[in-house]
Length: 156
Length: 431
Image 1 (cartoon, rainbow over the protein chains, first blue to last red):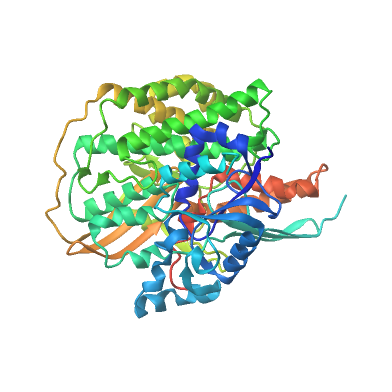
Image 2 (cartoon, chains in turn orange, yellow):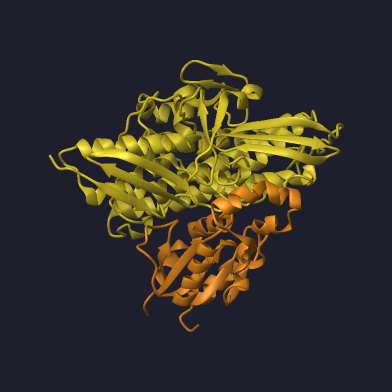
């Protein structure tokens, strides 16, 4: 059976779940790399662009139109999209500026304008269809391993 | 001689922590523009932390960065304890030292094995190493075994390797499980020979870029990441409380991160700075087994940051084996602060260099925060070195334009920059 093509993408976040993923590779890399081709994963390799894939793991919340465009592209290329970690699943804590008082918003306004930030930070499901979620800050390792075991099982 | 005119834009630099890009222009064989851009979107932690409980601040500020999270916890704990005039117990300091060792092993191993090593073998990824080649096969196994030893040490002491829940103001919520200590000890011992091999690989690595800039690092007797005064390679001794006043904030209109200068010049923090300025403090066993590599320090070759990190992994292993072998951790109460207000700073050596947290607390609520991270401090130096590297390549008779982007990425990776950290502390005073 051919390997599933996998992408691992990050948006606005601290990349804690990416780090947990690299730590889980310590003990799972042999089984996972037999079944999955981590073709688009900036943490692991230099990918030229992005193409069709079976699974997209997406960490982080969405802060700008350019991120919306990229997420939409990933969604269109991926058969399955999995939200990874708290920022992707519920927006927090990356969306904390959504709740700033007027004084704090005024402080950060020059940066929001300068770098074309969106008015609000959004979770993934605000923008695209999410097939699975692995919540947690960092992501729940047990849930992630369960999901990986499902994905690596040929019958599923 | 060839004439090169080129605009090169790297949108996403791979195998680094977080997002960064680069715009470079070459006119008539000279770099005329070089902008290293930190492209991570900000999450505004220095604003968000205001009004939050001081007790919650370390866990909240840990979310600045996944990979350096435990360093942020330790820096903010130190800042709060200084502000509230609380002195942690010697046992707490020993446990924090172990937590830092776990971070150093895990984080440096990720950088060296997964990010840098593929460059030395002309591979895109560690996962592409040839399983039929015994050396490459072994290195892949070493990579994950070494990383795991740091991960398990962090879990033993901090409860988790990322955003550790156990370290608190005045102590630890839980002590290491005595039944698990021998397992972690054994794991550290088992991976130690792999690191000696890794040190040799980086000692013999072919990359070189010599620069002459000040280096800043903690100096102390036992290569501690948690205390000591700061010294610079130009001989200036800086008390930790005066560190911030020696730095100037620089605004880069193209980057979402703050940059800094020291005495109006670029400077470097991190493993290379520590090794240059503090290597007599390394563990005696590390001094013996890394002796031939240590002869290369002090070094002005920025690629020796990789070698310095490899030596630091060995030192963290030796130091942890000593601590775990000689100490029994006994229950003790968490020390409660008696003051409710104050100002304090925490300054520690995070894996990538000096990390500074300054917190103002009133009635146990955070009023203000300033945080300086290592990648922000190195940012201008990274840019200067890219410029130097490209100008050197342009002068070379073997200049190959097709390899330029790759060569630049290899240089950036040598710094091990962390963009998640760097992009969240821009001064809100746009120039």
